[in-house]
Amino acid sequence: MRKLPSFSALRAFEAVAATGSFTAAAAELGVTQAAISRQIKALEEVLGVPLIVRRPGGNDLTEAGRALYTPLCDSLNRIEEAVRSVSAWPARAMLTVSVAPFFSSVWLTPRVMGFIGANPDIDLRLHHSYAPPDYARERVDLGINWGNGQWPGVEAVKVMDGGLTVVAAPGRVDPALLRNGPGALMSERLFYEFAPGDWTRWFEEAGVAGAEGCAATRIDDTHALRRIALNGDGFALLCHDLVTEDLECGRLVRPFPATVDTGAHYFLNFPVRADLSGAAKRFRTWLLKERTGPAARA
Image (cartoon, rainbow, N blue to C red; front, side, top):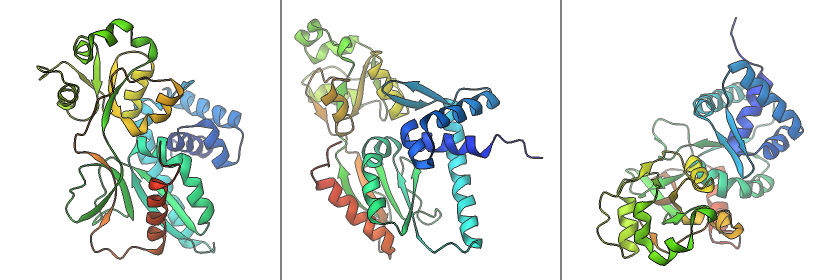
């Protein structure tokens, strides 16, 4: 016999992990938020490890949660595809989009119901990945991924600027630090996600010399990096356009206005000379309109 937790609990966890929200997961599955919470708690008890860290400002996956989510999502996709292939369900166009996780959570998810509502004949699936897909091997139609956009065999269209800015919790920024200027940050706890030189480049942009090799800790997960900043544990370099809401609501502040262009941005991408499906073309058109429309800011 297979030793597996209940399918309902696994499905509830997958929905919360994908949306980042118990409320959104409940709406997706057509149950109450309390039911989702019970399913997650039951799953954590069966596995003996926490999967989701529940916080007032959002929910983060633990290390165990991240380890479970990707193979679970892939398995559910394969099951759904197999069921569809042997069923008499009306045919629907299937569209798989590879998307950077934080971009998906903060920018795409709040908007994607507009696309789904306008395209009920398309079965949209989101696969989370920073790197663009290997279109020759993966069954992916489009990507929205982070990088320089110079990927072999891939056409890329910039959809969001990736400029990095320094953010922190309001309580972490005292008047003395502001008076002393950007150089004062070199004595603070600094965190980054991508390249060790990002902080050096930021200091140069802010007019601070001699910052080469400044001490900083890498956090290889944007959700965790944002959480560190929100918790007041230090100063984090984050994509400005993806923390706009945090800044506007006062959850985070920018102690200094400098933003550094590292050459990496969020790009819509697809294979060069590919004959895109109708569903992929419709999603591309919708996304590019959202990028330039009144709701384009994160």
